[in-house]
Length: 463
Image (cartoon, rainbow, N blue to C red):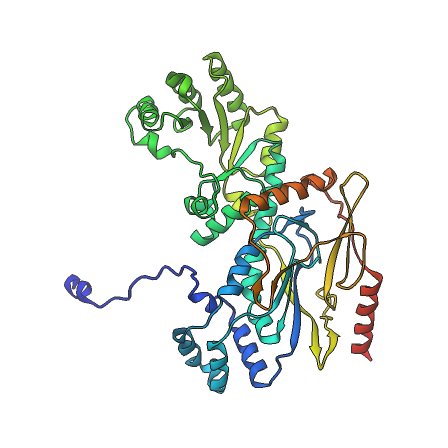
């Protein structure tokens, strides 16, 4: 029996990782059926779609735009190989679709125009984050990927921003890779967390690719692998004399702290991962100070979030930095962002026609739009107006040109530059909107001209 099983031909395991080759299938089937229908019915007019968040989630008063770099990469690299075209042609749903459609896909290249809010920008409900103008087929096929990449990174960057704000200037480190929803999510989360203000990440791939400081020492298993706790500390110090940060709560935190002091002046830090961290941090701080180790930093970790961090600090916790994982990279309290991608305008025979959705609770605003931001006399955010692209306002336009006819218009900023953009934006957001339990919405209105177009579009549909 076992011999038979061993000799059986077996399918090789698949990683299911995304790569540049399989980007074309990283979509919903209905995107492909729609574009096949557009092709067969010769409905490929110049069209404009906008990606935005209809309503901010509960307990969120702002968002940090993130994910644009990966969206641009997708638009530039999207191709349909013969292997995948053969697969699609073999699907029953496409049996009546002409060969011409698949020839079109074989030569597919995105050639549209892209306007987007720069990553790191603070944004609010209904403000366009990305605006795509292209042929209907090109603008449609990209919907799923754009929503996936922008929704997730924006969600996590926004969560990280809240955690960092709650830390009161103390460093926050992304510890979430092992709890993210898969390895790919872990890398994207590390990027988004850094944009949101984190000082570093435990994710080595993200650190390598993006230049984010990699941070990490050892887990409880290091201590448990030794019969003697102090011996584990000594050996770790021998191997990493300039980066001796010890996890001291494997057995008894207070005893662990006392043992850690034996390392002496070379001890760089200790980490607390369990128990009443507020109380323990105070006792550990005293032990370290009494041993003449006032320079040694205390890091806290263990299912932390912005609320717990705020409460700990309010109670006087002696914490110098926070390692935050699960709650941040999954945005556990708000685990999904309801971003949408909607058709807002089409051009037929040189005439622009506004488009909108009418359904209850999910209606949209028609026409190409732009967000405009106004500051008060102290340089703080005062209000935003969503208007038409050709309106003139004194406020700053939020959407900037990114691609023209499929070509990138400028260099992509580094994640470090994006983090600076986010910090600058957050510094201009009034404090009341950064409060963890803020229930006051930042003022965003639509312009008179946009309201008139919306009303005319509604009337034309009704009558």
